[in-house]
Amino acid sequence: MMSGEEETNNSVRISNLLASKFEEFWQNCDSYLYKVAKGGRSSGKSTTIGIRIPFEMMRTPVNALIVRKVANTLAESVYEQICEGIDMLGVGHLWKRSKNPLQLTYIPFGTKIIFRGADDPSKLKSIKTSKHPIAILWIEELAEFKTEEEVSIIVKSVVRGVLPEGLRYSVFYSYNPPKRKQSWVNKVFNSAFIPENTYVHHSTTYDNPFLSDEALEDIEYTREHNELKWKWESLGEAIGGGIIPFNNLTFRKISDDEIRSFDNIRQGLDFGYAADPCAFVRMHYDKTRRKLYIFDEYYKVKQSNRQIAEWLTSKGYHHTITTADSAEPKSIDEIKSYGVRITGASKGPGSVETGEKWLDDLEEIIIDPIRCPHTASEYENIDYAVDRFSEISNRLDDKDNHSIDATRYGVESDIGKRAPIVPDMVSFGNLM
Image (cartoon, rainbow, N blue to C red):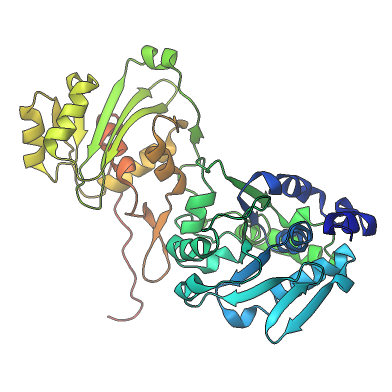
């Protein structure tokens, strides 16, 4: 009997089935546990995975589980997508198709592709197959899941036991990025910090050479009349509310030589305790070029004032004035008693918006993601707040912004006495 790979290679050439953009994705599938395909709509993500899964199953005797958030969407989405992939491979005669129950069986091995909804992810914990292990998982439309924990439950139900020799796990995620940068899926995969076992591939609608002329005309119409919608739908960009905070960010290594040359040091501290971390940042402000360098951080939960002071002293940072959140004067006094130079920030109406705007107006904010991973993550993922009427605020989300607040405090003296930004008044229509 010919192996699935040999028979597939004799039937069709895989390269003829893939958009050129996805050749790299295909080549990397064997090298990573997690394969993430994200991007614009109709870019070819699901088509590629729909070919890849039966291809992998024809090489090794394992079962596959394909999941979407809602069960009643399976039959007319991922099931048909896998069937199309099988037909594109030219191996339809080797697969048995069933819609009741919804599954596909690879006849030579007797292995199955099982389809499940994850309306309640915990129900998937007990899913088992007797003869062959479930070693392939595809979660389609990943962004439909509200939390990363929901997805983790599903993954752990598959990637758990030791597989027989020669077999390996293979996990696929695919999704169109949500608008909000604060969406968990954007924060995890639109990041400078991707785990070594994860490959992230981004594609746009323009990477799909098989789109009709009519579809392309519709895309161009959207681009001309609603550019933000086009960026989200076709380019797969997390556009937030349409305004991107901090488009002046640069993430790169800041060398020891650079740090030794810094002579305009700023330090800021945002207090936290239980769930909220204490966040300290050490910076250099280049006034001439209007560039801010963030090159060290302290970011921990449940830190006492004594522990904060000890860390600052151990780093030699206690000699430089630190500007801290003035909402905790007792904490400031205690830290000062340990020999640390520290003062409270001067808060006032509009000071938050003024500070955020000052940072956004800088020529460049350079953050070392190795020395300051939490700070880099906050700046990378922050978005503008949305009020209860879905209107964009002129303030950043007051969530996961501890390092950003510490930055504002640290550069307070540089911001100067500008006129405060008065928050927009909320309009309630004709209620009065």
